[in-house]
Length: 431
Image (cartoon, rainbow, N blue to C red; front, side, top):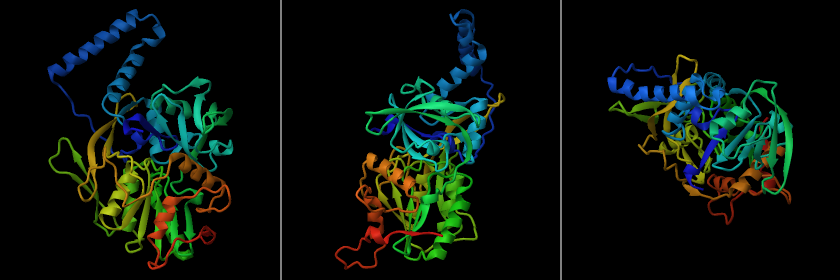
């Protein structure tokens, strides 16, 4: 699948495109050039003509036409920039902090195809309805969504808490369908889901971060303390597979837990600044500066998650195992407008500490281990059914070859013919 062929939706963390700004705000610079207003006059002429002559008067109001023009303008720039009307901006601002009313799913959107669910938030509306990763949303309240743009799918899935909606779902094989009725809920999205913190083989920690938001650094710090107390000493696996990113500030503060204070985490190159803006690690009570770390990645590890992984690898604090990451290194900023809405626009490009650009290229793993997407969805569903068991056994268990490869890197028995721990010995829940 080509990178340009799909978009991310994170239905509790806004969209991947809408979360990367990290809370940055821009002040509009006044423009007074005659040519600017002359060109804008053409837009006014078109709006006036349509308002008077378009056959459906209800669709040609000035406010509606201007909103459509702003949406189209931003959409033409890149896949991540956009216009957020007042109501959408309010919803997205909540999501950027990890709180939002929705159904509790992460998904990918392939152009002219259904929405594919990649993860389901434990305890959320989708989870309560029995929805599993790998299922596809074909219709929302009877409306077919294959041809809809990203923001339209978001608007249909989001809404006030208590609102009802009906989804028509296709099975992962695309051969059977079912309808599910849901009620939206106000949910605080945990970056570290219940199945995310466990010991493997007694002394290797496992930590899965589903996204980065304002709560992530504190959640990860608490998990690290629990894992240490439970016996983590040989190493830590950080699972960033299917992590769409989120708040850059949350990723930076989380990375600070693993690096000395003042370490370069990443930099950002702006169009109108000759020097790159450098972001460094901050002080904190907890530091894990020596414990060996391995990070699991795949094609849906993106944005802030790539910045986190790149920072730790460039400082030789972690090795990457799995598949090449998505390749989203765009610095997004939010420009609030006087109507209560906002523009979300690309203001720069992020670079890793070594100066490597992420946008369009992604991060190549140190240990490539391919895992096909259907298997990944099954793994996500497996974790949801059996929290705390990262390598379950049984005839229906899915083998996680990427995690197995990560565990081999921690093996102290280099001369052993096969040092990979067996699944029966890999299940020690973190208290």
